[in-house]
Image 1: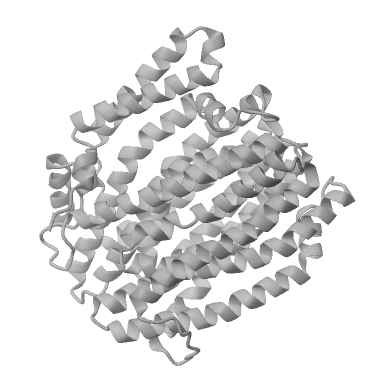
Image 2: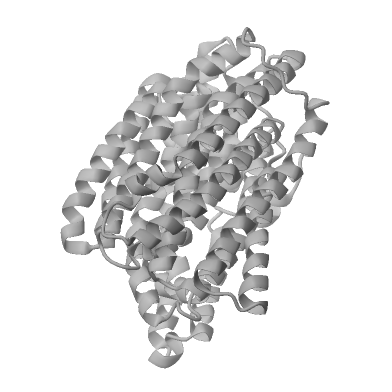
Length: 544
């Protein structure tokens, strides 16, 4: 418990974002490293997500919340499912911990060979998966869109999938490059590279939509082909960076590599966990498909709003902490190892909580302003904004649970345990499906999201309970509960007061929405350092 007390003292003396392993754990890196790594991941993700939102705004402008917009959602969602199953999530759980631990143990030559062996087998896997996806595109379309949809829509989805599966293969290979860069703590490029994927689509929409005047199906197919091009550009950026770190990119197929066998041992649990989560996504797609035209597009628009803070606070923090946690497991002293892991986990959960509480309040209470600024134009009208606002409100209650679950899951992966997250992912899918089936009867798309919210908290509490038993604690004393609550109240009160004071016509306009959101950002920026919770200058400062 000494490690938890040290972490608590650090958070009281310094900014939350500078928490790291306590002095009692000699294997930990200098204190600023974890926070700085999280900052770089955050910066890359913010850049990527901003361009993603620009892309989505343009897509919304041309397709609105229509039947064709639903095709866009379904086609890209199927590609994302395969990417998440084979790509970043799986590599984070199996490749990065083994590679980072080998490097932390001083076995750099073996680590390099393992990375190139993983690349060789990944090339075979992605090539096979892409070819199978192209061949089975009609069957996949039938499974996903066997509801009340037209034959023409199914044909269009099939055409899109035959382009998007090769795109997915390129993105999976990019995830390997991301894993190498992350293990070497080169975070920014790996998470900023997806900007190229979004830029390619933005350019295609500008050229074919604004300049050439294409609409409907031709414009949609231009979007699909530009996504394939963007995936290739992303890979071309990440591979040279990985090559510079490894000294070469010649893949191996050494089945006897002990590190590969260790990664393979973790893989079944990871695939089950990721597969169950993707199954949940497919179930949600099917459920929403029966809720009428535009339901898919409304849910996806809300998801993109939610995923900006979720990616920054959950994915970013988990990705930055994973290499350090995996390195800690190389320490043979169990007590010292657990103390270091508790401190890192507590510091990560503290950073997540401090930033998630104000973000959740903004999603819940300022969702209309956010959607109006991000989306409302062209076919995405005020009615679409009102529909999406209700879904964003529901997503706000999942933010802290999902962000914490990401950190807890990666802690399990760092410790070599991929079975526990897989088992609890099954619980999550069951809870999500049952909750969605019940609640959608009364709340439409919002009911599906509320089912996912309940499931997120079920998974978080289950993972936390298990890790608490294994580590002797979660480092929760590091979380400044009272100051975090004060930060949330001080951040949300001024924009809410302004929102109520503005005339209705101005409040519902783009300038009025911008003014409210700027007020929220200013209130947060003023309150956080005064509460001793967040200081941008301290985050940017390097220390040796």
